[in-house]
Length: 353
Ligand SMILES: [Zn+2]
Ligand SMILES: [Zn+2]
Image (cartoon, rainbow, N blue to C red):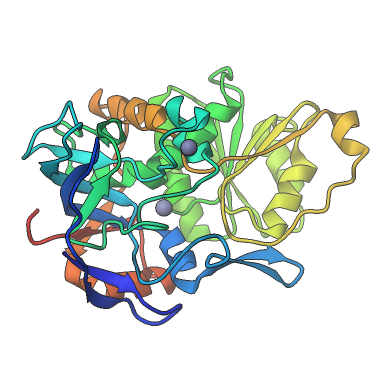
């Protein structure tokens, strides 16, 4: 198989040739047809996350080994089944759940693969969708997109389930109670779409960019707040009709986390999703006194992917704007994303799509 692989940190991904994997046991080999280019690809390419205070987390220390073909928003066509793979056949088009683990621990067996302690995520620790072929460890990691646009369906594997899983952590909430989203980039617009599909009616979106706030309003935000305003917290209270009890921080940098923590009402929940980086110092007595929850949310699980695809198939989920580019132009696509020149999602389209 051929792949665009990261051979060296921060060097342009190179064309690499690796043996096409032979599916073993329950594994399924697919040829990639579509693959989204995600912001976390930039972190993988750079090889690190900013932990704040001058500290960084190096992905090579966490088991990332190069070269690696990135790409975790994958749709592909089944080309070969392992001897124990059941439930799919050659030629089937499937979304590939990429956040796989060891396959045998309690988390994996409960279909909470993203909570497995042995991360084997496709496109991070194993070759992903920037290659011509990809291996799904088990048929249960494959979801039928049905009549959905495969380029859009690919994005459900990461940006879709990331917001879906975060939203599920603040639910159930009455439809008119405010849910605050911090960040109106791709994840923010997706979160608005998912909340609307779930019939939620009060969505307050914070962003420092006027252009992104306008995009959020066009996507159906109830109101928006300029996060860079001196009195941003006051404006959040005004938009929410008081202190909000649910904030989903899709940026999760030092400034947004501080703002969210300060805005939460008693008993409120802050769900941290973004990987912008930085740190948050918590005044400890306020945690019990205000009975707050600060919870991280990392991607989602296969059950959530199936639920989200079902929601999309029901026709209630507005599709994220996607632009397809040829798979061989993966490098240019990655650089466009790094330089902030992408609205919506870039999705690589392979020659066999
Ligand atoms: Zn991603
Ligand atoms: Zn496991």
